Image (cartoon, rainbow, N blue to C red; front, side, top):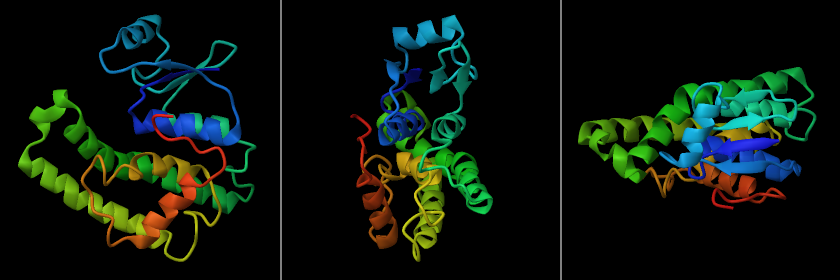
Amino acid sequence: MRLYSMPSSGNSYKVRLLAALTGQALERVDCGAGSAALAEAKAAGVLPFGKLPALALDGGTVLGESNAILCFLGEETRFWPEDPVLRAQMLGWMFWEQYNHEPVIAVRQSLLCYPDRAADATPERMADLLARGQALLAVMNRAVGGQDWLTGQPSLADICLYAYTHSAETRGGFDLSGMPKLRAWLARVAALPGHVAING
């Protein structure tokens, strides 16, 4: 399998992390923003939705959307709950990540870290993203307040939400000092056998 991946992207990282945790080999094609590799991938039509990541399978089928790729790679692994209720809860967190969490936590990080987006980082927008992001992180802190994992056992939901949450402080300027349960959850994900860092 060939993964078209942006090295600094949390959406790409979550796929690489799951592959590492489950021992699945991926040929990586790193496509930085504006790179020749990205232009070639778009020209070759291997990005189903015109964005990264994308996973090309041996038969020629290409999968897009990071959480859909997680479901494909995660099925029949220890991160795929057998219980249908736990599985639905896992998917609920994954939908929440793309609809609520990623558009705030990831966007604030990108506005702070990518020079070409600096013009969009107005004080009003950054303050709004900070306030909204703190509230979203508090939701996660409460969720892991009485259990180790988002659904009670390690699942794709934890991998999915770890990708941008683990860098929320260092890249996004969010404050987790009042969220010890969330910090402990981040440490548990990082301690999973096979874990790799975003630049690993």
